[in-house]
Length: 186
Image (cartoon, rainbow, N blue to C red; front, side, top):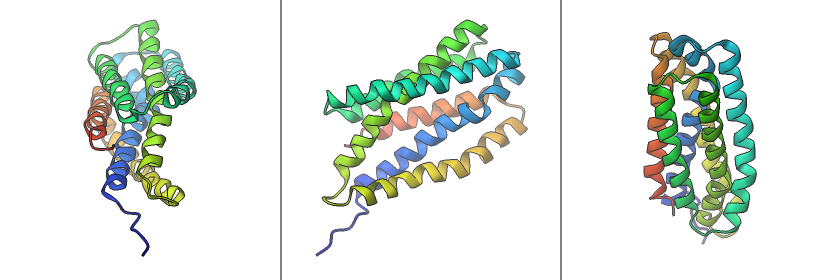
C-alpha cells in the first residue's frame, strides 16, 4: 500500500517554511521604507544595509552547506541561528543604529538566515517518506508560496498604520516562532 505523503513532520515543516518566509519577507520587502520612515535612515544607507543583508544571506547558504555536511543536528542549527537572528532584529527594531552598525547588524542577520537554508532542506529530506523527496519538497515549499501571499498584505498594512518599527518586531516574532517550531521538526 502507498503511504501518505502528508505526515505530521511534513505538515510542521510546511509551517516552518511559512514562518521562515514571513520573517525574511518583511525585512527584504519593507526594511528600506521602514528604516527611512521610522529611524530617519537615509535612502542610500537603508539600501546598502539591505544589499548587505541579501548578499550575506547568499554567503550564509554556502557556509550553511558546509555546516550541514558536518552535523546531524539540523534542527538545532536552525534554532541557534534564528535565535541569534531574533535578538539582532529586535536590536534593529528598538535601537536607531548609525549606518555602519546598522549595516553590520543587517549583514549578520542575513548571513545567519542563509546558514539555516541547507539544514532546513536536510530536515525535509530526512522527513520525506522513502522515494517521495520531490513530493515532500513540493509540499513544504508551499509554505514559501503562502508567505509570499500574506507578507505583502501584512507588512504593507503595518506600514499603512505608520508603525515602521513593527516591521522588524513582527519579523522577529516570526523568527522566534520558527525557533520554537524547530523543536518539532526532527
